[in-house]
Each structure stands twice: as structure tokens, then as C-alpha cells.
Image 1 (cartoon, rainbow, N blue to C red):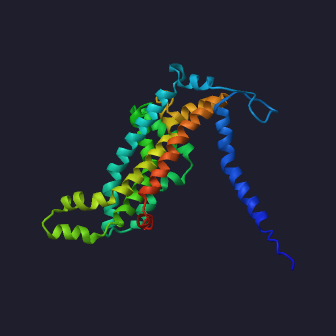
Image 2: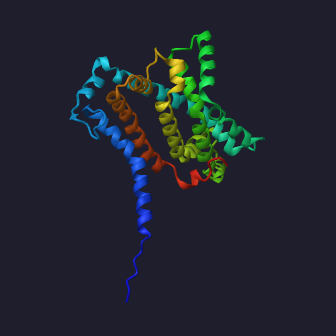
Image 3: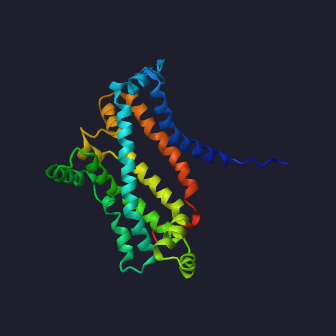
Length: 270
């Protein structure tokens, strides 16, 4: 009796191996550069390992900690401003029968629909005329234009996932509109709003183009430091800076997975 040999595992293993290389290959290269003291062509691996460049990055002259704090401050202010606008907008879009509701939601995608470079050049020129160029406020305003698409869309979905009957039940026992929203709707929508805040925070933390044209060289964020190091050929410093940006992104995305429920995701864009 001839044994049947299944050879389908070969192409599947090849595809999985290729995907793993595409995903983890650049990350492995990044990690190697963070501890490489000497590494040059044609050597496949670093010739010397160490943490000298880590000391340079975190030294007072390295400017990494100051840039990180600036990035966190800008991202936090961006989240606050985005949520202040997104919560009433998301509630109105989820509860009121607004005309052209779909077009209103699509309007928040406009900043993503056009090339960033010509837009930011003109914004930088306008901000220079009114004194916002090179300020935290100017950078935050630019970041908010990109963060609103996540904040409003997810906030709308979060409020849509809250059963309106719960609000009406609170109103029927004497709660006013504001109290029903504060005590019933807002706590139930809070996980979705928290997820939108995380998306906005990560978008702001990684944003480069707007920060470069509006903030540099006064407002120096971590992506700007990464760009300066990379363009100057300081691959170790650029890799360490990239790792500083990568770690919170991965951590926050794991948190988002817990906050975004299936019922909220099903409402996104509706």
C-alpha cells in the first residue's frame, strides 16, 4: 500500500517564511543597528556590539529625552483637542438625523486625501504670518487635522453602539439630557473613546511632515530627531530613536485590541 505524501506544505511553508521575513526582517535589522558599534559592507552582522550610542542618545547633548517629552506633550494636547471636538460631533452624527451625514463623515478624510507636502508648505506660510510657526500650538493644530478622522469616526461608532433605549429609560425617571449623557451614554461609550484617543496619540507621536514644516527647528519632536539622524548617516542613533517610537506604538495597539469591541467596529463608517 503506497503512502500518500502531501506536498502542499512546501508552498505554504515558503509563503509563511516569506511573510515572516518581510515582517521580522526589518525589525531584526533595526535591533541589530541599536547595538552595533561597527558594521559596514560586506559583513552580514555587526563587527562589534555595545551600548555607546545609547549613552549618546540619552545624554543631555543627545536631545532624545527633550524631543520625547515634546512629542508626548504635543500628542497629549492633540488628544485633548481632538476629543473636545469629536465627542459632541460623534454624538450628533450617531443620534441626530443630519442631512448629508455620510458626506460629513467623508469630509474628515479630506486631510488624508491630498498630498501632505504642498498643504503643509502653505500652512507653514500662513502660520508664519500669524505667529504660529515654530510653536507648540501650531504643531498641535496641524496634528488635530489628521487626528480628527480617527477621533470622529470611532466616537461616532462608539455612540452608535450604545442603545438609545438606555438614554430614554434614564430620561423617563427624571434625568435631564445632559445627565443622561453623562451618567449613561458617556460611560458606555468610554472604551471606544479611549481607543480613538490612543489612535490619535499614536498618529501625533509618529507625525513628521507637519511637524517639520510648522514646528522645526524650534519644536523638535522625536520623528524630527529620527529624520536628522537618518539623513546624516547616524544609523545607530536613528535606529534607537525608531525603537523609542515603536515600543509605545506596539503597547498601545495591544490596549486598543481590548477596548475596541466588535459592536463598535461594526458601526465604523455607518
